[in-house]
Image (cartoon, rainbow over all chains, first blue to last red; front, side, top):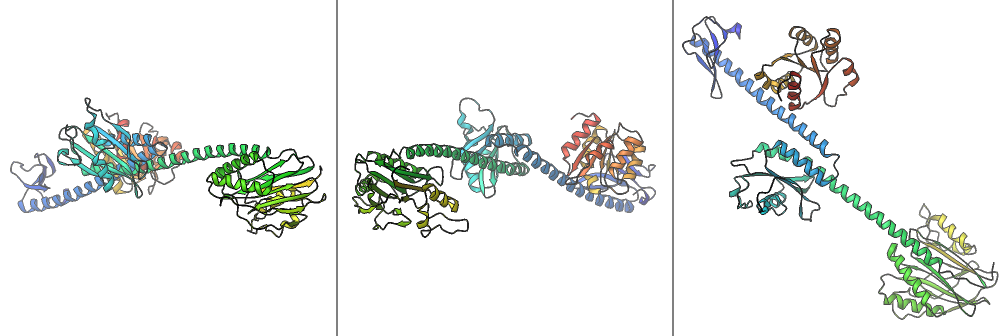
Length: 473
Length: 125
C-alpha cells in the first residue's frame, strides 16, 4: 500500500492519528472516509480522485478482513464446541449412575450458560413417569410449588418431551405452559435428552434474574450438552437394567439350586428298603430341577409298588408339581397300580394343575407275578422287549379316569425296567434321535448303563431309569 | 512480551492469532512465521517469551526447531508449545528429548490456548 500511495497522500485513523503515507501534508482538512459497516475506520487525505480510489481499496480490504475474522470466529466457536463435547463425554463416560451423569451434565451446563436454577428429569422407561435426577437452585420461602416448572410435574417439560425439540421461553408470563404466579423465573431454556429415537428426559435451566433472557446460541449449546447427556443416561439405564437382570438371575439360580437340593432329598427318600428285591434307580435331571419322579414302596405282604413318571413343563413349576405328587404318593394307602393312578389323577385335577403328568405304576410280588397300569407313559421293558399296554390319558387331564391293569410275570433271571422319555428322546449333536428301536437291546442293561448311554448320546430332557430284579443281588 | 505463532497453514495462524488477540490489549505482541527456518530466524531476532510451534512443517519440522532453540541456542527460557494434529501419533519421547514444554492437539481448545499463554506470560487469568 505504501508503494501505491501518490505523493501528497496519507492515511489516518478515525481519531486523525497518522498511519501511512506522506506525513508532511496538512491533516487539518477532512479526507475521504474509509467506511465499513457504517463505521468510519479512518480517512485518506490527498488529491480527491486518488484519495477516493485508495479509500475504496481499503474499504474492500477491511470487508475481506472482516469476513475472514467472522469465519475464524465461527471456526473457533466450533473448536470450543468440539472440546466441550470431548470434555463432557470424557466426564460422563465412566459414570454408570443416572444421578451422577445428570449432576455432572447440569454442572457443565451451569458453567456455560447463566442460570439460577436447573434440573434434569429422566424417563427411565418409555411408559414410566418423569423423575428428577439432578437439580440446583435454592427454593425461596416455604412455597416450593413455585419451582414446579423444573419438577416432573412441569407442563413445559412434558411439552418438550412430546415435541422432541428444545425451546427458549423468554418472558415467562406470556406462555400458558409456564404458569408461574410468583414470577420467579424470567427466562427458561429446555432441551430434550434424545438417545437415538428415544427421548430419555429433559434438561431445563431457568433464571430468576430480572430481564434475563436466553439466546439461540444458548439453546445450541444446551442441545449439545443434552446430546452427550442423553447417551450417557441411556447407557446408565441399560447398565442398571443389566445389573438388575444379573441380580435376578443370580437369585433365580439360588432358588433353583435350593429346589434342586430339596428335590434330590425327596427322591432319595422315595426309595425305601425293598426286602426280597433289588431295586436300582438313576435320576439325571437335564437342568437344576427336573420334571421326572419315581417312588418305591414295599407293602406288608412282601410285594413292592413302584411308580415312575414325568410331569409336563420345566423348571420350578415342574419341580413343585413333582414335590406335590411325591407327597400324594406317600399318603397313598392302596397298592393297586390302577387305583394309585386314578387317585393321583384326581389329586392333580383337584389342584387345578395346568399341564399333565405321565406315569407307569407296577406292583410286583415276591413270586414274580406283577400287575401294572399306565397313564400315557412308556410301558415297562422285560428282557429287551416292551410290554404291550393299552393307550390311556395322562394324569391331570380328565377327572375320574380308570386305568386298566395288565398282568405279567418276572422270572428270577429277568429285569423289569421303567424309564422316562428322556431315554428315547436323547438326541445326538447331529440331531439324530436315540429312538425306540435302540431301547429294546438297551433295556437289557443295568439302570446305570441305560441312563448313561442315553446321556452320552445327547441328553435333552430328564433321564430316569428304575430297574427291579427279584432277590437280593 | 511476545508470542510467536509458527504454522505453515495460514488459516491456522489466523485462528491462533485471533484466539490470542485479547492479549494484545495487555501489551503482548503476536508475531508469526510460516515455516521452521523462518521461525528460527524470528526466534533469534525477536526472542519471544512463548512459541506455539506446529510439528509438521516443511523445511524444518517443529521437533528440529525446538531442538535447535532449546539445546543448540540454549534459549531454555523460551516456552515452547508443540502443536500436533488430532489423530496424528505424537512422539512424546521425541518431544521430551528436544525440550518441548508441552504439546497441544489441533483443533485446539481456544480457552486452553489463552489460559496457557496467560500462565506463561504471568498475566491475570
